[in-house]
Image (tube, rainbow, N blue to C red; front, top):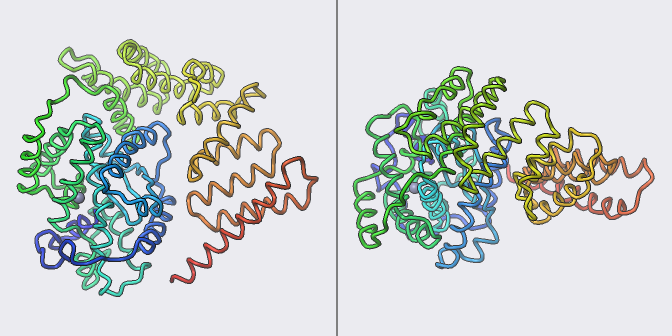
Length: 498
Ligand SMILES: [Zn+2]
């Protein structure tokens, strides 16, 4: 991604001058620890970006695509235990409609809704993730940051953040980073042609081993190639950071001939629905919303079932945002008929129904729909949506069990800020003030907002001093003390870095 920004600045892009870049294997770059630290610094800012998006449905989709890739990379020996343990492995969604995905230092990835919106199969989306994952496992970022430059992590972090900002708005970028400094970024923070080809090669192997159709790469390349021909307005920043050369295309075609995979027949209905969700959520001006409600594909006999489902999902969500509930119900009914035979598409349809009901403040209905979905495990989107409905309803028998499920969720995924926040609200509702304040602090810790965490943990300490503690509160109070010290240590470490 980094390179791209430089392209947006009107500078000569890094990939046209290979001599400016460290060649593969020539430089070890920065250490794992330093890279993770740098990634934390960048991610901390991204969590505070207004475009940062927590959407349980899209989060789950990306995670489900991602998990088999990580597993395959480890099985192939591309991902060492060390790297697996020390890097963050977190994917941050951005509401931005530009087609972009990028690997950040330390195992963080960014995915823009614009990318999810343009791909037509989950294999294509997985191919982008596999390529980005390979940039991380091959330590391309570390190797691109030349220690000779003597830039402090703070400066590098600022540059990368600047680069991300520019990728969202190329027009506003002019003059943001000027002169010699821009040249320095250009040579320090870009992938070389060789790195791109390596990420394709390694990514292809990971994608295939993870059980995806390697044709996903071809579909993605075709989209990027088409975009390169018709589109130079910055809507495809991914292209500038990962330039699609004829060599890359030829390499990929050679690989596919060896593998001779057959393209998957039919459309990918689930991807079409989630692409629709991404489209509507990334572009929600009234005009855009009205356009989604009138998509001809919803009724066109030429459209595939997947295209129709995508158009109807988008129309339902757009009507909902426009607060036209009757029209939303109508689109949803048609979607529901179309998706009834595919279990996963049907599940997404029911989650959307719960969303429609909640938006109308019909929380009992939302809860009934969610209960209909309720499998024994209660996947995260159902769990969060159920809790959100319960928060708006009078005392309900499910409160205790959902609170317990949220506790299990944060135990298993301590960085799940949204689950911590939801748990905090559920606990507050049940008069469990101390655990609720601690959960608020944990949510801030998960987003690496150390000052915010200190504030919440101090509030928890104050509460503990001024109230009679209930059973279990003593343990909570001592956890709060420990976590407060940890948050304070993080603040000191951050100050020392500057
Ligand atoms: Zn790349």
